[in-house]
Length: 396
Image (cartoon, rainbow, N blue to C red; front, top):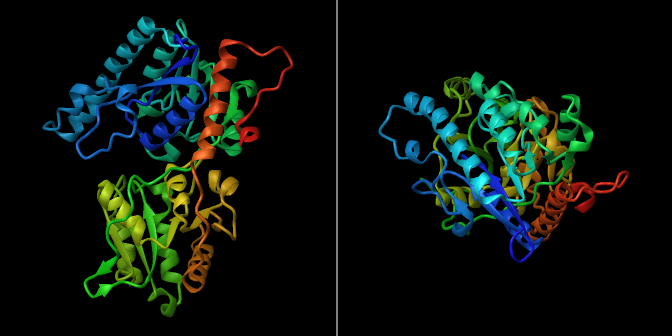
């Protein structure tokens, strides 16, 4: 512990997969009397410093982040080697600094991370947050990334998930029930207000705007959205547009071809690139409704970001959407993979133009910080036999 008696916790997010979440969790932990520090990669040009600089040790991937001149395939191969070097640096820092707890937010290369967790446990208990109970939400990844997905969970002292569905998925994988804690994901906030109104070449665009935001991946159901748009009556379809924005992680040619075949090209815009913060914020200003017809999800950072904006949501009845979205007052829920039901809800949104109330973030993260801090303390001071563990659901 620190001189003040606060718990010293080293949190690990090597690739900064969830920087906004990391920053919000940091604030909650500080309010709960925890001294967090982070092991991460360096900030890239154009990225915002989400985490407090004094709490960041950016030693992961330092040399590979500077090697942008290398071919993409070679950089990808070398990143695995860089991850191994980063884990060696992590183990050295743990052995030297002796934090009270080490908390992994993401497992990047399971076999290597498992070995690091095994060594780190010689010095401190390890907590692992499993943001996705299905490896990479079913996205195709390298064998090295998918092999041994369960090993870090089995080796960690405690495992955090964000939903009851995530807990059930881990139980189905035979992860011991006493290891698992459900700690909710909290709402996130935009870094700045929108700077411009939505416009088209002809001036102000008053069509009802559906937005799909984030990396474009197969599980997010963009194909379902295109099919649903094609099912809308022409009178309603002319009053709507769909913007799909984000860095593509799949081949978009079949999606573009289907858009042409259905004749909905004037209603669909694909912005296939990683958006800057200003572009992201302006896109959110354009949105009337966010579409999330995901085939699979546990928790979604995008969901908790847009939930705080006071915009309507249409999402699949899976994971966090099924557990958290208040149907009828915040949005609509649809069966996954059903363009027919999605079309019905999109048509209702265009005609009714519903607007939910905004959700404040602060109080939720205070409770999340307190619940997580309690979990840390229980690792250091085991509860008496038979005592109940406070779950995230009870804290929220």
